[in-house]
Length: 175
Image (cartoon, rainbow, N blue to C red; front, top):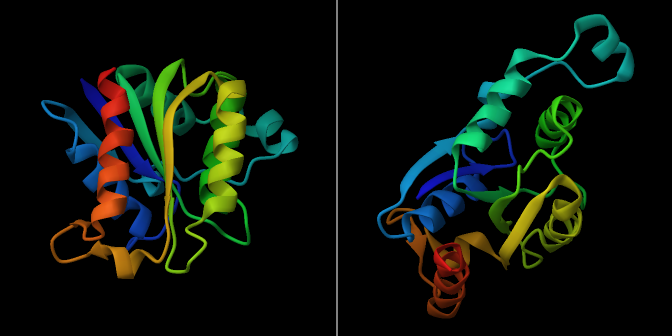
């Protein structure tokens, strides 16, 4: 199984990237590629820019990565209750190139934040919208209070209950 994992965040120290890297590693015998959405940075989407520039190659490159995967693991950072601007822009350009961005791939959708909310608001939005973009949500999980529940040095969840929930979520990719 080939898994593409990425954080929907442009932060170089993304806690969501740490989470998806760990989560994807839980799938036995999987080939995992962790993307950095900074590699797909494009001008802010607008209809005017699309008319002027056309569809950027980087949007197609991102879609090609998704096409080559058997499954996706995405970690959503939350900015003011919503998607990060970096992810929303990448998604907007990608959806203009191919409306079915997720290409009927199984999805594990995750979110975390330093606070007790665990980015649950943006996760709910992602779970709710994924089917409209041809994503098959197999499982989703919010991890609250990241630094209390994740051992950054070891790169793994230290909260046993959350670790079990994440392992169960990731097992859904093998079903």
